[in-house]
Image (cartoon, rainbow, N blue to C red; front, side, top):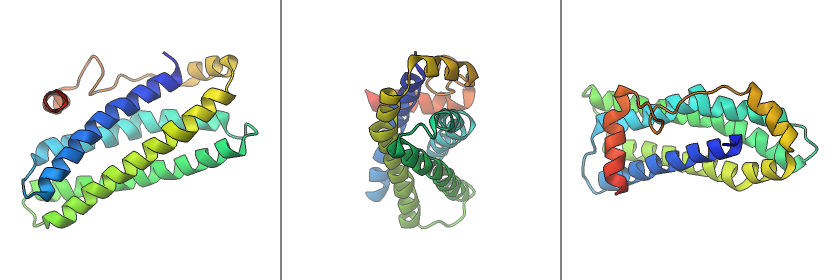
Length: 182
């Protein structure tokens, strides 16, 4: 599997999770309370996996191809780096809000829904930048030799939710995802 294929599969998996969160957001807006523990696990997965593996891998890949002579690619790489930082902050804010709810703090549900919606919107916009601009440009510009060199430098890590070895803390989340995807 190529690096872009692996990252694309991460995006496919993330979109599944974002769709579930979007469904939960719709239900929340209708007055139904979601399972906040499950919601916390989903955001935790997105944040931890992205921050620990996915975004660093992308950042290392983008750094490798930066200054390739394609101004559009360089601009998209800069934008993507900024978005990675914004996504982390957005996830931290949402996790903090969920933690407050789980600890019985008073959190107005309309404010929480707005945070969740903003989080989802940022994630989708970011995926669109990568899938719609960055990945096609990299696919067009990069040579097989460059990919072969880069792949030797990139870290390997099994996805804790969609990989073969799901971590125990994500088992409930994984089950919920499977139910919602049927």
